[in-house]
Length: 397
Image (cartoon, rainbow, N blue to C red):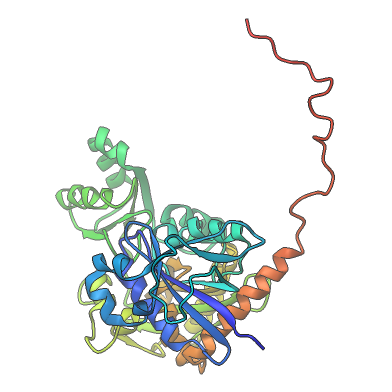
């Protein structure tokens, strides 16, 4: 039987570009090549798509700016009948298999963090092309990326979150004093200032006074047009857990992990520079399984599944918690619909190896695609057959 071609897409126009490259290469390296024929697709920081044999080599990414000149640029067809990648310039070849004929794609495996790759933008493109893809759909990706909308949905579903205040960048620029006054009226210090749409802790600051608050909002405003400020939550542990499945079928949770930060919150360096021998989220300092009570573990597992379902997620996600051991309470910080390193380290501790995890995610993508095909998307009748004959033309004065 011919192997399915899996397009592993990474990079992208995002502040998390480099992190995405790491995740993409991890998936490419660990996919089951007995079952699948993987194709590495790199999206440059300018948004162009590229394939080539050099993309398999991690050393290639030490000089990101030279990659477009050493690879072939491709585009994804929006024709649902084709489901293929086409070459922009057919005169040059950077592939070992030679001829630059269109490449058929069976499944897309997005490894894109942040930006259009995680907020539903590219998922819309995949839907137009009618190609099965791993992970959540347009709506769940968008709501899972936007911290303001996400928390509003969580509140409606009785999922505990930190108190917060949100506003637009333009509001802060035009009415700085009012925004600061409203924030301080609603929340107590310390506070956490965040861009509404960002990941990997980029643009996030902890503040303890008004001067720090103003400076932090200015920083966050560089990364998004909407800002969220959260009241600090007294916690003793940061607990993460992953969920796998499609929301309309069985959902399974991984082992819980306790993650450690060098500061008051888990920042970019904590996540990706904790161990020079590791890469991606796998380098974060952590304990798996987390040292928490069985009762708390069960409550976190149940809440993670509820969080996954209320956003109608698919494939895999990671849900992040802050736990107050003294009171036996917790809040949900956020859900990551496309977590770094696809949280393989959590699943390996749950007896699901990286290779098996990738296979399971591809199978879930195909299940979701098949399920969606059972939904009526258009009618065979055409009410426009007689359009124009007998209709009155509008008269201009």
